[in-house]
Image (tube, rainbow, N blue to C red):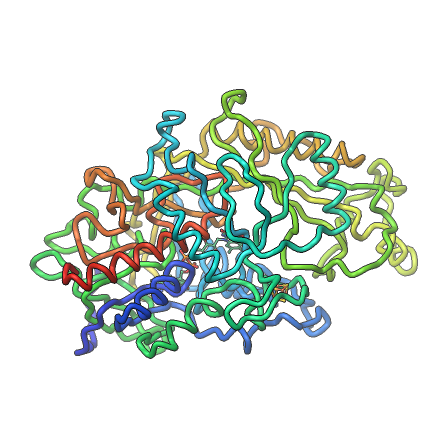
Amino acid sequence: MRRVQVIRSRKTWDVVIVGSGAGGGMAAKVLTEAGAEVLMLEAGPKFDTARDSKMFAWPYDSPRRGMAVPARQFGEFDAGWGGWTLEGEPYTSAPGSQFDWFRTRMLGGRTNHWGRISLRFGPDDFRRKSLDGLGDDWPTTYDDLKPYYDEVDKLVGVFGSVENLPNEPDGIYQPPPRPRCYELLVKQAADRLKITCIPNRLSILTRPLNGRPACHYCGQCGRGCATHSNFSSPSVLLPPALKTGRLTIVTDAMAREITTDATGLATGVSYVDKKTGRDTHVQARVVVLAASACESARILLNSKSSTFPRGLANGSGTVGKYLTDTTGTAVVGFIPRLMSGVAHNEDGAGGAHLYMPWWLDNRKLDFPRGYHIEFYGGRGMPRFGFLGNIEQLTGIEGSGRPPGAAGYGKQLKDDYRRYYGATIGFSGRGEMVPNADTFCEIDPSVVDRWGIPVLRFHFKWTDCEYKQVKHMQETFRGLIQELGGTPLSPMPPKEHGYGIEAGGRIIHELGVTRMGNDPGSSVLNKNCQAHEVKNLFVADGGPFVSQADKNPTWTILALSMRTAQYIAEQRKTGTV
Ligand SMILES: Cc1cc2nc3c(=O)[nH]c(=O)nc-3n(C[C@H](O)[C@H](O)[C@H](O)COP(=O)(O)OP(=O)(O)OC[C@H]3O[C@@H](n4cnc5c(N)ncnc54)[C@H](O)[C@@H]3O)c2cc1C
Ligand code: SF4
């Protein structure tokens, strides 16, 4: 690590939290309400959801019509400031590997534009090794986490329906919105194919909660909700923490390393003030890392000392190991019966109103674990680009467009009216099993613009994931056929991995500081406390032992709440 002149702050905080997203926001709320003086370091700038959201912008408000720009790679109006690349902040992939790392740099992190699919992991998801011999069991169970999931539901608000499905625990739900027209058609097709299709579980309010109004169905959640009707850390977690008067937030503060004393305890965090480029050190009795899984691993690996020569809390050598992402692939189908639809408002809540949880029994399949299905379509406000894949319809059966057909002027407008809303897309989101070839480490020769060594990724899908994705492709094609439609792309062959997305693309990277009972094979104990440094905790996706066929954020929130309550108890007894 390069030598720098460091500005030292005299105050000792009870807790320093690195990162203000799902994990950091929850830890700040719980700890400040429990009486701790908390300093939060956030690498991105301030973001005020009510002021900065582009929820009400029209495409014509921009000369780019909302198209993606380098600083907002999900679209110019999207509330995600960042993307797969960040200027001055590279990462590398080992030869033969591809891992695409998505980073949002702003107060609240990725919660400002996430998909809000808010699923609990099920009892089986915590004990996969016991069930199929692959990976590892968690040192904690669903029953341990259930009270925290319940609290998250009540605090944040989530809509859904009680279904009593195996390994798909129900939560405490607000009523779900009614399905859109195309969603009803998909539900009918899924029922005929015996694929479970139920109301989605999204953290969007359909009833007022804790002073936040219900959703007004503008369908633009990805732009950040100016009325705070969906979940983001700046809308739901940071305001109550700030209200205690015990939370101080420093934005544009890029954490570089955690410092330790001669006894091996954490003493604080060094960070770069991005506005001045100066290094600053803040002292704390407890450090909570919540910078997102891989960034937290990076900070630990960069925190080397004579006591921790392999990086902090890395005596086991497992920091960076057990990296996973969700598997994903997609198929879009043209559905002729949706052509020339009657124009009506089906904006709804931001996201699908229905989804399909995993519905099969692995004992009868050639791959482990499962996936859920998300789908999309309809006639929402058009974005930049071609409407409803119209450019792909030439020569497709039922479209009435002969091969090579194109158009402009009146013909093009008529075509848009005829075809817009006549495609439906299906995406699979499945569980990857951790493998020894997939991990991150410090690149020995690349640093970022502040001289901080960057991560190098190694990533490999195995047959488990390829076979699962093949099953997804076949299922989506079956659904499109059942809807009377035609897929807009051919079945991807084995040589192309059956269309599996590159690692990192589904933005559910987990593991890398996993928890476990054995300090020789894990970084954290079951309270997300470092085995080797008792006043160091991780509160993001790093502690996960495995993925699931569910999105991870509801579990990050529940774990962070539990970790923060544990810290508060330990502080009371003077243990940390
Ligand atoms: C488009 C999109 C859709 C998604 N949809 C879903 C979904 O539907 N359901 C679901 O469960 N999950 C979804 N996710 C994933 C979800 O956003 C993440 O799981 C969740 O936000 C992770 O929380 P976190 O606290 O670990 O990290 P983040 O929310 O990313 O927060 C980390 C914060 O730490 C800051 N930081 C990073 N490095 C440093 C540093 N060195 N110093 C100081 N601060 C630092 C970052 O700027 C950021 O603000 C989606 C993500 C994206 C991008
Ligand atoms: S759809 Fe609802 S929750 Fe989403 S941005 Fe619009 S009002 Fe807010």
